[in-house]
Length: 349
Image (cartoon, rainbow, N blue to C red; front, side, top):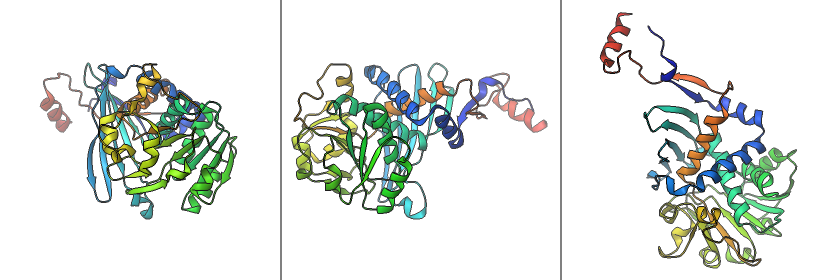
């Protein structure tokens, strides 16, 4: 059987190779580089096709496709969210993604995105924090200490200069896990016994809990003036983390309003409630933080352009390395019109 040509082989980045790539570059470096890629794509936001993700919801979770294109490349991510998975020893979120050349339609990258989604979500949070958080912020409350928490803490350290993280989770074991994993990364880690304790003295408050329900992780009296809230746990219909009164006191920044109004914290508000798109702040078209007493809220649900940026980054980062393997996943007949002949000759061989 004739071996496939190089044009028919698609580089695949496995979980093992993703981890090797990240460790070889250093996780803080990868987070900073992802921030640069996401910011570059946000600066050309109008160039992209944009649509809310295609979601299939059930009582126990959601499966989603997140597509976008800038006209030169097309990317999508498959991702699930099943909060009860951890009871069976499974991940709450798993994902994979693909990047393709628009001019031919041929895939140019297939990659795991469970690890990569955690990295890009943290990078997105840190980018928003750099734009919106009070200057010289040094302390962050991390409420919800699951799979995403360490990435968030390290991203805010690497990008925003956070020095202290105050951890709280209703599962004490999750907090101990997070604190242990952060040891040796240059952060002061404070374990707290309540969300109220965690937010004391914090200039940035990150919420990242998993339960698919209308929850009140932060009540109005817990948030004082001058704080930046990074709300990333509310990411599907029927799932929120903040009391509505906090939203009414905050200047709210989002990725893509048609998606966030369905899935984010602002699903609690009237459809006409004003929000600002973050890309407009990044390019200087709209204002972000305007005063010391202002409460800024990044209502993040994750958007396809961020995954596109992550796919672009990985496609570049693997060049000239051994951190991918070629997959024979595209038919490559000698005559493009003779696909059947290719099958017949394979049978004869």
